[in-house]
Amino acid sequence: MTNYLIAFNDEWVPDLTEDDTRDRGAAARAVIAEMRDAGVFIFSDGALDASTVVCSVDPSSGSPVFTDGPYVETKEHLGGFAVINVPDDAQARYWAGRIAVAVGWPQEVHRFPHSVGRTADTESATRT
Image 1: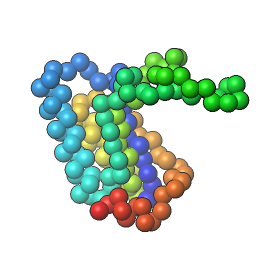
Image 2: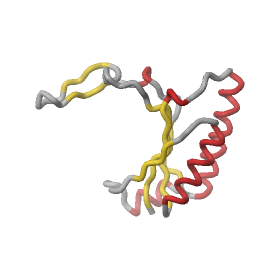
Image 3: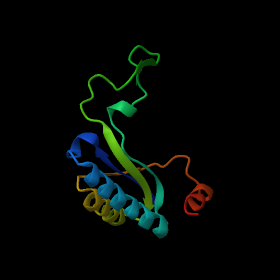
């Protein structure tokens, strides 16, 4: 099993009415519930944007320099994500497609090639 990140940038989200936001949120939560039932769900969060950035860290001086807020040169911000654990790319694509259709905007799929810190114990614990 491999961990995958399904994510979208805040800029990809169209302007929505309150009703649209509520409906799409409910649709996304339904897909997350299906992921839980299928035993592939690990973690997710949404409604992220520039306002949720705590700080940025610049190591170029040899020591970490912390600045409140987003990195100045960043034009895009993470809008939301889900981390899943599935057998292959096809399953990751399936769940990303389900989320994309539910919310109505693009998603990216990233494979975590080296899921450090994940053990069989934590894998089974996330599925209960």
